[in-house]
Length: 209
Length: 153
Image 1 (tube, rainbow over the protein chains, first blue to last red):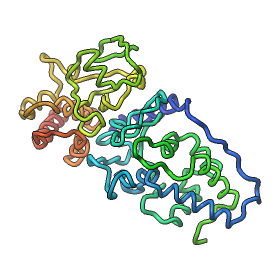
Image 2 (image 1 turned 90 degrees about the vertical axis):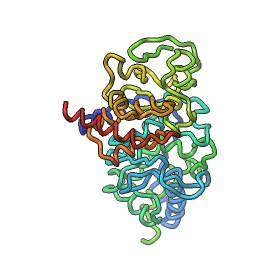
Image 3 (image 1 turned 135 degrees about the horizontal axis):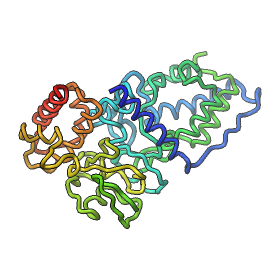
Image 4 (image 1 turned 60 degrees about the vertical axis):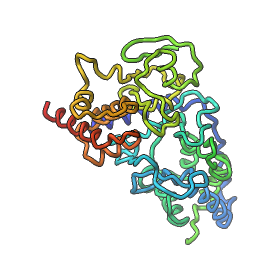
């Protein structure tokens, strides 16, 4: 079982690398050191929190729970993902039903891939829950801020690496172009990356510091 | 466009956006996978892609690449049934039968990665496959019986 899961995850990762090529990139231009005040950094953080707590992001950042959520204007009341979906320790559903069973990977950037309101969204990489440490659903601004600025809980990244992560992870790109009647994450991917970089230059301030 | 289904190669002249289910049923005449909802909400169209369950209504043929497709027609044969097909018959699972090819493909995929699933894992794996006849108790029994046969073999 463990071998099968590892083999599958490896295959998925290799496929993801292979199909990531044809998507838009963002510009990563950090502000000059000292050019962003702590208050400006906090303003940037407040916008970052709007994005992180938005359903397009938070629904799959469920922390210790392995159940993705359905919430936001297009879902009515907040509820767990239908169909009794459990992503398991693998975070991709390898123990029961893979996310990719319905959230198939698309290779070509055809326009109407996510046009249907109720179909499973698709991107050019494998669908999965975020890592357990990246727990955003239902969390406060302070909790998410502390998680994101701590390399021990953010995947050993500084803010430049966080910005690069946003650039490379196509599931994150999807949050701004979700298709159907799904509400996109606020601002734009480029504005979000700019805010991450400004927040970093300001010293990653959090609201309760 | 080339496609391999049940170990046979086919050439189809279709748009890359066409869902795999349409290619199977309308272009190749492989009608085991059924159309239920078209939006991955029912599981009737489930096939295997490289051995893993996939809703064929959700996979565009242009996204398939070199991956190999298996349908219920290729899961076993009348002379050599897949273990899931055997236990399906032993437990007389099917009622109207419309969803059953998808149910069996999903169950076979589960057992290929988790040959000894718990009741909760069976329920989690199969909850995306709907059955209007309500054959769920027999589906679970047949999967548990298949798992037992796998453990005993």
